[in-house]
Image 1 (tube, rainbow, N blue to C red):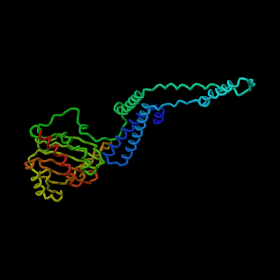
Image 2 (cartoon, rainbow, N blue to C red):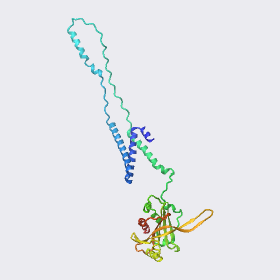
Image 3 (cartoon, one colour):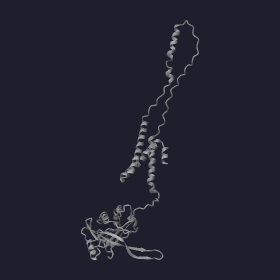
Image 4 (tube, one colour):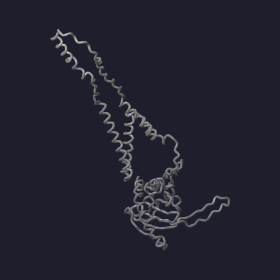
Length: 366
Protein backbone atom coordinates (compact mmCIF):
# COMPACT_ATOMS: atom_id res chain seq x y z
CA UNK A 1 0.00 0.00 0.00
CA UNK A 2 2.81 2.40 0.88
CA UNK A 3 4.54 1.61 -2.42
CA UNK A 4 1.41 2.56 -4.40
CA UNK A 5 1.13 5.85 -2.53
CA UNK A 6 4.77 6.70 -3.21
CA UNK A 7 4.31 6.04 -6.94
CA UNK A 8 1.71 8.81 -7.21
CA UNK A 9 3.89 11.41 -5.46
CA UNK A 10 5.81 14.01 -7.52
CA UNK A 11 9.39 13.23 -8.43
CA UNK A 12 10.91 15.75 -6.00
CA UNK A 13 8.84 14.31 -3.15
CA UNK A 14 9.11 10.62 -3.96
CA UNK A 15 12.86 10.38 -4.55
CA UNK A 16 13.97 12.14 -1.32
CA UNK A 17 11.61 9.84 0.60
CA UNK A 18 13.17 6.79 -1.06
CA UNK A 19 16.65 8.07 -0.16
CA UNK A 20 15.73 8.77 3.44
CA UNK A 21 13.95 5.46 3.98
CA UNK A 22 16.70 3.45 2.30
CA UNK A 23 19.52 5.15 4.19
CA UNK A 24 17.84 4.87 7.61
CA UNK A 25 16.90 1.21 7.23
CA UNK A 26 20.15 0.31 5.50
CA UNK A 27 22.39 1.82 8.17
CA UNK A 28 20.28 0.34 10.98
CA UNK A 29 20.26 -3.17 9.50
CA UNK A 30 24.01 -3.04 8.83
CA UNK A 31 24.63 -1.98 12.44
CA UNK A 32 22.58 -4.92 13.72
CA UNK A 33 24.36 -7.27 11.32
CA UNK A 34 27.81 -6.19 12.50
CA UNK A 35 26.79 -6.32 16.16
CA UNK A 36 25.19 -9.80 15.89
CA UNK A 37 27.56 -11.15 13.20
CA UNK A 38 24.54 -11.98 11.04
CA UNK A 39 25.44 -12.33 7.35
CA UNK A 40 21.83 -12.50 6.21
CA UNK A 41 21.08 -9.16 7.80
CA UNK A 42 24.26 -7.76 6.22
CA UNK A 43 22.98 -8.81 2.80
CA UNK A 44 19.62 -7.14 3.39
CA UNK A 45 21.35 -3.96 4.56
CA UNK A 46 23.54 -3.98 1.45
CA UNK A 47 20.43 -4.18 -0.75
CA UNK A 48 18.92 -1.15 1.01
CA UNK A 49 22.13 0.87 0.63
CA UNK A 50 22.47 -0.07 -3.06
CA UNK A 51 18.86 0.97 -3.64
CA UNK A 52 19.60 4.28 -1.92
CA UNK A 53 22.72 4.83 -4.04
CA UNK A 54 20.71 4.33 -7.25
CA UNK A 55 18.11 6.87 -6.09
CA UNK A 56 20.82 9.39 -5.21
CA UNK A 57 22.31 8.98 -8.69
CA UNK A 58 18.88 9.55 -10.25
CA UNK A 59 18.36 12.78 -8.26
CA UNK A 60 21.84 14.06 -9.19
CA UNK A 61 21.13 13.51 -12.89
CA UNK A 62 17.80 15.33 -12.59
CA UNK A 63 19.45 18.30 -10.85
CA UNK A 64 22.12 18.53 -13.57
CA UNK A 65 19.49 18.44 -16.30
CA UNK A 66 17.54 21.19 -14.53
CA UNK A 67 20.60 23.44 -14.22
CA UNK A 68 21.83 22.93 -17.82
CA UNK A 69 18.79 22.48 -20.09
CA UNK A 70 19.52 21.37 -23.70
CA UNK A 71 18.79 24.03 -26.49
CA UNK A 72 15.56 23.48 -28.43
CA UNK A 73 16.27 23.21 -32.28
CA UNK A 74 14.24 25.68 -34.48
CA UNK A 75 12.93 23.99 -37.73
CA UNK A 76 13.89 25.74 -41.08
CA UNK A 77 11.10 25.88 -43.76
CA UNK A 78 11.96 23.89 -46.90
CA UNK A 79 10.02 26.12 -49.34
CA UNK A 80 12.11 29.16 -48.60
CA UNK A 81 15.30 27.32 -49.59
CA UNK A 82 14.00 25.95 -52.94
CA UNK A 83 12.42 29.17 -54.25
CA UNK A 84 15.13 31.63 -53.28
CA UNK A 85 16.83 31.65 -56.78
CA UNK A 86 13.57 32.42 -58.61
CA UNK A 87 14.18 36.22 -58.99
CA UNK A 88 17.58 35.67 -60.69
CA UNK A 89 16.04 33.37 -63.27
CA UNK A 90 13.31 35.87 -64.01
CA UNK A 91 15.88 38.59 -64.90
CA UNK A 92 17.25 36.71 -67.91
CA UNK A 93 14.06 36.71 -70.02
CA UNK A 94 13.60 40.39 -69.27
CA UNK A 95 17.06 41.28 -70.71
CA UNK A 96 16.54 39.25 -73.91
CA UNK A 97 13.23 40.87 -74.58
CA UNK A 98 14.76 44.32 -74.24
CA UNK A 99 17.39 43.56 -76.98
CA UNK A 100 14.80 42.37 -79.61
CA UNK A 101 11.99 44.93 -79.54
CA UNK A 102 10.84 44.36 -83.17
CA UNK A 103 9.30 40.99 -82.56
CA UNK A 104 5.68 40.97 -81.46
CA UNK A 105 5.00 39.72 -77.95
CA UNK A 106 4.16 36.07 -77.72
CA UNK A 107 0.75 35.16 -76.50
CA UNK A 108 0.55 34.45 -72.87
CA UNK A 109 0.53 30.80 -71.99
CA UNK A 110 -1.23 29.66 -68.86
CA UNK A 111 1.23 28.22 -66.35
CA UNK A 112 1.20 26.89 -62.78
CA UNK A 113 0.14 29.40 -60.12
CA UNK A 114 2.92 31.05 -58.13
CA UNK A 115 4.04 29.20 -55.01
CA UNK A 116 2.60 30.55 -51.77
CA UNK A 117 4.85 32.50 -49.43
CA UNK A 118 6.59 30.40 -46.82
CA UNK A 119 4.86 30.25 -43.45
CA UNK A 120 6.64 32.04 -40.63
CA UNK A 121 8.67 29.84 -38.29
CA UNK A 122 6.74 28.83 -35.14
CA UNK A 123 7.71 30.75 -32.06
CA UNK A 124 9.42 28.70 -29.33
CA UNK A 125 7.03 27.43 -26.69
CA UNK A 126 6.94 29.35 -23.45
CA UNK A 127 8.95 27.56 -20.75
CA UNK A 128 6.90 25.70 -18.19
CA UNK A 129 6.70 27.18 -14.75
CA UNK A 130 9.50 25.74 -12.62
CA UNK A 131 8.27 23.99 -9.51
CA UNK A 132 10.03 24.59 -6.20
CA UNK A 133 11.99 21.32 -6.04
CA UNK A 134 13.74 22.10 -2.77
CA UNK A 135 10.45 23.04 -1.13
CA UNK A 136 8.93 19.73 -2.18
CA UNK A 137 11.95 17.83 -0.89
CA UNK A 138 11.79 19.58 2.49
CA UNK A 139 8.08 18.86 2.70
CA UNK A 140 8.79 15.17 2.01
CA UNK A 141 11.37 15.05 4.78
CA UNK A 142 8.91 16.71 7.13
CA UNK A 143 6.18 14.17 6.33
CA UNK A 144 8.56 11.27 6.80
CA UNK A 145 9.85 12.74 10.08
CA UNK A 146 6.28 13.01 11.35
CA UNK A 147 5.65 9.36 10.45
CA UNK A 148 8.83 8.24 12.21
CA UNK A 149 7.92 10.27 15.31
CA UNK A 150 4.44 8.75 15.37
CA UNK A 151 5.83 5.22 15.08
CA UNK A 152 8.49 5.89 17.72
CA UNK A 153 6.25 7.61 20.27
CA UNK A 154 3.14 5.51 19.63
CA UNK A 155 4.05 2.60 21.96
CA UNK A 156 4.87 5.08 24.74
CA UNK A 157 1.66 7.08 24.37
CA UNK A 158 -0.82 4.25 23.81
CA UNK A 159 -1.56 1.40 26.23
CA UNK A 160 0.39 -1.73 25.43
CA UNK A 161 -1.08 -5.21 25.14
CA UNK A 162 2.34 -6.86 25.36
CA UNK A 163 2.08 -9.98 27.49
CA UNK A 164 5.71 -11.06 27.12
CA UNK A 165 7.54 -11.82 30.34
CA UNK A 166 10.21 -9.45 31.58
CA UNK A 167 13.05 -10.20 34.02
CA UNK A 168 12.05 -9.81 37.64
CA UNK A 169 13.34 -6.71 39.41
CA UNK A 170 14.38 -6.45 43.05
CA UNK A 171 12.20 -3.35 43.37
CA UNK A 172 9.09 -5.41 42.50
CA UNK A 173 9.19 -7.15 45.90
CA UNK A 174 9.78 -4.03 47.98
CA UNK A 175 6.97 -2.86 50.21
CA UNK A 176 5.65 0.65 49.94
CA UNK A 177 6.31 1.12 53.65
CA UNK A 178 10.04 1.26 54.38
CA UNK A 179 10.64 -0.91 57.44
CA UNK A 180 13.48 0.05 59.73
CA UNK A 181 16.52 -2.18 59.75
CA UNK A 182 17.05 -4.34 62.84
CA UNK A 183 19.49 -2.93 65.39
CA UNK A 184 21.98 -5.66 64.52
CA UNK A 185 22.77 -3.88 61.23
CA UNK A 186 23.68 -0.66 63.02
CA UNK A 187 25.93 -2.60 65.38
CA UNK A 188 27.74 -4.39 62.54
CA UNK A 189 30.19 -2.18 60.59
CA UNK A 190 30.00 -2.77 56.84
CA UNK A 191 26.85 -4.91 56.99
CA UNK A 192 24.92 -4.93 53.69
CA UNK A 193 21.15 -5.12 53.40
CA UNK A 194 19.03 -7.69 51.63
CA UNK A 195 18.13 -5.18 48.93
CA UNK A 196 21.81 -4.55 48.21
CA UNK A 197 22.47 -8.28 47.98
CA UNK A 198 19.50 -8.62 45.61
CA UNK A 199 20.78 -5.85 43.35
CA UNK A 200 24.21 -7.48 43.23
CA UNK A 201 22.87 -11.01 42.59
CA UNK A 202 20.18 -10.18 40.03
CA UNK A 203 22.67 -9.68 37.19
CA UNK A 204 21.71 -9.84 33.49
CA UNK A 205 24.27 -12.63 32.95
CA UNK A 206 23.29 -14.74 35.99
CA UNK A 207 21.36 -17.25 33.87
CA UNK A 208 24.36 -17.62 31.55
CA UNK A 209 26.65 -18.23 34.54
CA UNK A 210 24.28 -21.02 35.64
CA UNK A 211 24.42 -22.61 32.18
CA UNK A 212 20.86 -21.64 31.16
CA UNK A 213 21.36 -18.50 29.03
CA UNK A 214 17.86 -18.54 27.56
CA UNK A 215 16.04 -18.10 30.89
CA UNK A 216 14.94 -14.91 32.64
CA UNK A 217 14.48 -14.32 36.35
CA UNK A 218 10.90 -14.91 37.51
CA UNK A 219 11.32 -13.76 41.13
CA UNK A 220 13.90 -11.57 42.86
CA UNK A 221 13.75 -10.25 46.42
CA UNK A 222 15.89 -9.39 49.45
CA UNK A 223 15.36 -9.86 53.19
CA UNK A 224 16.90 -8.04 56.15
CA UNK A 225 16.89 -10.86 58.66
CA UNK A 226 18.95 -11.91 61.65
CA UNK A 227 20.61 -15.22 62.48
CA UNK A 228 18.58 -17.82 64.35
CA UNK A 229 19.17 -18.37 68.06
CA UNK A 230 20.95 -15.01 68.42
CA UNK A 231 18.07 -12.95 69.82
CA UNK A 232 18.29 -10.64 66.80
CA UNK A 233 21.87 -9.59 67.58
CA UNK A 234 23.59 -11.02 64.47
CA UNK A 235 22.72 -9.55 61.08
CA UNK A 236 22.06 -12.12 58.35
CA UNK A 237 20.68 -10.51 55.17
CA UNK A 238 19.81 -12.65 52.19
CA UNK A 239 18.62 -12.35 48.59
CA UNK A 240 17.07 -14.87 46.25
CA UNK A 241 16.62 -15.00 42.48
CA UNK A 242 14.51 -17.73 40.88
CA UNK A 243 14.61 -19.08 37.33
CA UNK A 244 12.63 -21.85 35.66
CA UNK A 245 15.51 -24.29 36.23
CA UNK A 246 17.54 -23.04 39.20
CA UNK A 247 17.08 -20.92 42.32
CA UNK A 248 20.05 -18.94 43.65
CA UNK A 249 20.33 -17.66 47.22
CA UNK A 250 22.98 -15.22 48.45
CA UNK A 251 23.36 -14.52 52.18
CA UNK A 252 25.89 -12.89 54.51
CA UNK A 253 26.47 -14.10 58.07
CA UNK A 254 28.22 -11.66 60.41
CA UNK A 255 28.94 -14.12 63.20
CA UNK A 256 32.34 -14.96 64.75
CA UNK A 257 32.77 -18.45 63.25
CA UNK A 258 35.39 -18.76 60.52
CA UNK A 259 35.20 -21.06 57.52
CA UNK A 260 38.00 -23.17 58.99
CA UNK A 261 35.92 -23.72 62.14
CA UNK A 262 32.93 -24.78 60.04
CA UNK A 263 35.02 -27.32 58.17
CA UNK A 264 36.25 -28.74 61.52
CA UNK A 265 32.61 -29.06 62.63
CA UNK A 266 31.95 -31.29 59.60
CA UNK A 267 34.94 -33.42 60.57
CA UNK A 268 33.71 -33.71 64.16
CA UNK A 269 30.22 -34.70 63.02
CA UNK A 270 31.71 -37.27 60.65
CA UNK A 271 29.58 -36.16 57.67
CA UNK A 272 32.26 -34.41 55.62
CA UNK A 273 32.14 -37.10 52.94
CA UNK A 274 28.35 -37.29 53.03
CA UNK A 275 28.01 -33.55 52.47
CA UNK A 276 30.82 -33.52 49.91
CA UNK A 277 32.83 -30.81 51.69
CA UNK A 278 35.71 -29.44 49.64
CA UNK A 279 37.95 -26.50 50.57
CA UNK A 280 38.96 -23.98 47.92
CA UNK A 281 40.05 -20.35 47.60
CA UNK A 282 37.88 -17.74 45.90
CA UNK A 283 39.05 -14.15 45.34
CA UNK A 284 42.01 -14.89 47.57
CA UNK A 285 39.76 -15.87 50.51
CA UNK A 286 39.31 -19.25 52.23
CA UNK A 287 36.12 -20.99 51.07
CA UNK A 288 34.49 -24.41 51.02
CA UNK A 289 31.80 -26.31 49.14
CA UNK A 290 29.10 -28.31 50.92
CA UNK A 291 25.86 -30.04 50.04
CA UNK A 292 22.66 -30.38 52.04
CA UNK A 293 18.99 -31.08 51.42
CA UNK A 294 16.44 -28.30 51.41
CA UNK A 295 13.19 -28.51 53.37
CA UNK A 296 9.88 -29.02 51.61
CA UNK A 297 6.60 -27.63 52.93
CA UNK A 298 3.17 -28.58 51.51
CA UNK A 299 0.10 -26.60 52.58
CA UNK A 300 -3.37 -27.49 51.27
CA UNK A 301 -5.98 -24.72 51.35
CA UNK A 302 -8.86 -26.97 50.30
CA UNK A 303 -11.87 -27.74 52.50
CA UNK A 304 -10.17 -30.75 54.07
CA UNK A 305 -7.24 -28.54 55.19
CA UNK A 306 -4.70 -31.29 54.78
CA UNK A 307 -1.10 -30.25 55.33
CA UNK A 308 1.82 -32.57 54.92
CA UNK A 309 4.63 -32.43 57.49
CA UNK A 310 7.99 -30.93 56.64
CA UNK A 311 9.73 -33.17 54.15
CA UNK A 312 13.20 -33.42 52.73
CA UNK A 313 13.54 -31.31 49.62
CA UNK A 314 15.96 -31.51 46.71
CA UNK A 315 19.72 -31.35 47.24
CA UNK A 316 21.35 -27.90 47.32
CA UNK A 317 24.98 -27.00 46.69
CA UNK A 318 26.60 -24.15 48.66
CA UNK A 319 29.82 -22.16 48.37
CA UNK A 320 30.79 -20.39 51.60
CA UNK A 321 33.44 -17.65 51.34
CA UNK A 322 35.13 -15.84 54.24
CA UNK A 323 34.30 -12.17 54.74
CA UNK A 324 38.00 -11.26 54.69
CA UNK A 325 41.28 -12.79 53.59
CA UNK A 326 42.36 -13.56 57.19
CA UNK A 327 39.16 -15.53 57.87
CA UNK A 328 38.45 -13.79 61.17
CA UNK A 329 34.77 -14.75 61.23
CA UNK A 330 31.64 -14.53 59.11
CA UNK A 331 31.10 -15.59 55.51
CA UNK A 332 29.12 -15.09 52.32
CA UNK A 333 27.07 -18.06 51.22
CA UNK A 334 25.93 -18.80 47.64
CA UNK A 335 23.46 -21.69 47.41
CA UNK A 336 21.90 -23.19 44.27
CA UNK A 337 19.16 -25.82 43.94
CA UNK A 338 16.43 -26.93 41.55
CA UNK A 339 13.07 -28.66 41.84
CA UNK A 340 14.27 -31.54 39.67
CA UNK A 341 17.35 -32.10 41.85
CA UNK A 342 19.87 -31.28 39.11
CA UNK A 343 22.75 -29.00 40.09
CA UNK A 344 25.17 -26.89 38.07
CA UNK A 345 28.89 -27.72 38.30
CA UNK A 346 30.91 -26.23 41.15
CA UNK A 347 32.72 -24.01 38.64
CA UNK A 348 29.42 -22.18 38.03
CA UNK A 349 29.21 -21.21 41.70
CA UNK A 350 32.80 -19.94 41.59
CA UNK A 351 31.96 -17.85 38.51
CA UNK A 352 28.93 -16.36 40.27
CA UNK A 353 31.01 -15.54 43.34
CA UNK A 354 33.72 -13.85 41.27
CA UNK A 355 31.09 -11.70 39.51
CA UNK A 356 28.79 -10.90 42.43
CA UNK A 357 31.04 -10.54 45.47
CA UNK A 358 33.12 -7.58 44.18
CA UNK A 359 29.88 -5.59 43.97
CA UNK A 360 28.90 -6.67 47.50
CA UNK A 361 32.35 -5.74 48.83
CA UNK A 362 32.04 -2.28 47.30
CA UNK A 363 28.70 -1.76 49.02
CA UNK A 364 29.99 -3.00 52.38
CA UNK A 365 32.98 -0.63 52.19
CA UNK A 366 30.73 2.47 52.16
